[in-house]
Length: 128
Image (cartoon, rainbow, N blue to C red; front, side, top):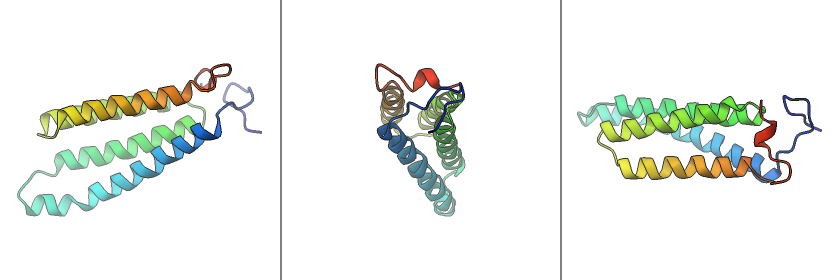
């Protein structure tokens, strides 16, 4: 049986683990896809900097999800920081700020909720 960093038995449910794997895999895919579009952006005469930053933030979110799987609470804060940077990139880079704010806060809310499940033995309290 897995143990958390605190030495206590693991309490992460299968749903939480599946959610973290989805977050990890999709953000790695988005990161690589973003890097592959840099040439297109430059060919169109647009600055690739926002795309590069967003790609790096996708990899950061994937790393944060991996850290949560390793029972590190810092992973959640890394994800929150990456979401904040993506919101700033959308606001100052000419993207859709509403979508970035709504999507970012929704994703953080879902992740926090998933880590609070089950109520009698929350995974969040076992993260170090």
